[in-house]
Each structure stands twice: as structure tokens, then as C-alpha cells.
Length: 240
Ligand SMILES: CC(C)=CCC/C(C)=C/CC/C(C)=C/CC/C(C)=C/CC/C(C)=C/CC/C(C)=C/CC/C(C)=C/COP(=O)(O)OP(=O)(O)O
Ligand SMILES: O=P(O)(O)OC[C@@H](O)CO
Ligand SMILES: [Mg+2]
Image (cartoon, rainbow, N blue to C red):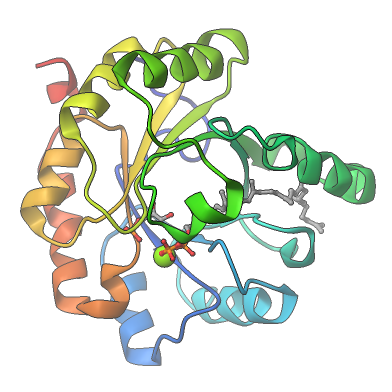
């Protein structure tokens, strides 16, 4: 696996903030000053232009890098450092693979800052998550099924990012390790259920980039411990 030269290429720890959830100025200050490598703004529901602009402008008071993971047309807000466009690979519903994205490209194509925009090949693996239900994700994949999706993303489609998404649940680290070893060029993002420094360390040993979301809203203190935990693990420990 190789690191990319894109802005996100060296990101080890990322906080994901949801425009549809409230966060106090104090908590946002702690997140932005935490030493995280970046903040991704995104969520699977209730995200629209106004709450996205509002959150972006609050984050922009700080120097931290801030990207938008665009989950619908309405929330395509200019002014972010980078844009991520999710493609859900493990759904039978083409709407979430390319349907909605194509419609958005018809509308925004000419205005997209392409050098600052990247596709993410999502594999959604927690059947109980909002995003799994929303997209009709086929989460009951065995290791070979996951592997086939990873070949599709990394080898056939040559997507720059493979995102293993367990939103709300800590994932199967053995499976993720196996995915990490399969990748030839994509960067591995892992997100889901990280609510302690120990889980953050486990994920950091096998993913390039570790994404921490919900715990920010449940225990800010626990969320903040994940930053150092991830940064303590060198990326080179990957192949162990
Ligand atoms: C000048 C200007 C306007 C700049 C912007 C230009 C730009 C980059 C435009 C975007 C163009 C474009 C192609 C947009 C695509 C829009 C689109 C419809 C994408 C579809 C994305 C998609 C597949 C969404 C499904 C849901 C999903 C995968 C969301 C990703 C985020 C995620 C998984 C969040 C987790 O959800 P959460 O809410 O945290 O869930 P829990 O409840 O479990 O916590
Ligand atoms: O919210 P959690 O479970 O930390 O997951 C992070 C992120 O992968 C969600 O898209
Ligand atoms: Mg969430």
C-alpha cells in the first residue's frame, strides 16, 4: 500500500462532524485544536446547505484542514479545502453507486474544483447503521465478498480511497487488516465505533486513516484521546 500525494495522503486521524448534530463552541474549539489532521464535515441524513455552511464557517475560525463529504446535491457548499464524493459499492441500488452522483455532476460539473475532489469507494458493513438502511447496503459479505469489492475499487476502478464504514459499531479488525494487505494504490479509510484510545490504536495499526465521529457527541473527552492514540502508531506498522 502506498500513501498518496493528495491533501489527505498523510492524514492519520480525522474527526467527522455532522451538520445535523449540535456542537457547542467549546466542544468545537477542543476538536479543532486537538491536533487532528483534518475535519470531514458529513452525515447521511438531515444535511443541507444552511447547516453545512454554518458548520464550515465555525470551523473556518481555526487553521485545521476541513473537507466536505458530499452526501447530497443540496449540501454542495463552496469553500472547503477538499471534497469527497462517496460511491457505495456494496449496494444493489445504482442510485447510490452512480445515480445521484451523475445528477449532481450534470448540475455542478463545470464548477467542481477537480484537483480538490476525490471519489471514495465505500463499503458499508454495519447492517444497523442509518447509512446501511438508507443505501440498501449488502452488509452480509464474507471475507471473499469484501475482497471482491476491494478488487473492484482498488484494481478495476482505481479509486483513490477505499472507505470501510462501520458507522456506529467497531469493525472486524482482522477483515480490515486483510483489506489493507490487498490494496495496491488506494488509501484505506476506516471509520466506525471508535470510542476509546485502545480502539483507535487498533484501527491505526491497519488503516492509513482513522475516522472518529459519533463519540464526539457522546464523550468529548474520550474522543480527544483518540488523536494521540492514532498518532502514536507509525504508518509503517501496517504490514505486521
Ligand atoms: C463551487 C461548488 C458548488 C463547490 C462544490 C462542488 C462539488 C464538489 C459538488 C459535488 C458534486 C457531486 C458529484 C456531488 C455528489 C452528491 C451525491 C448525491 C452523492 C451521493 C453520496 C452518497 C452515496 C450518499 C449516501 C450516504 C453516504 C455514503 C454518506 C457518507 C457519509 C456517511 C457514511 C456518514 C455516516 O453517517 P452518519 O449520519 O454519521 O450515520 P450514523 O447515524 O450511523 O452515525
Ligand atoms: O461515527 P463513528 O461510528 O465513529 O464512525 C465514523 C465514520 O466512519 C462515520 O461515517
Ligand atoms: Mg454519525
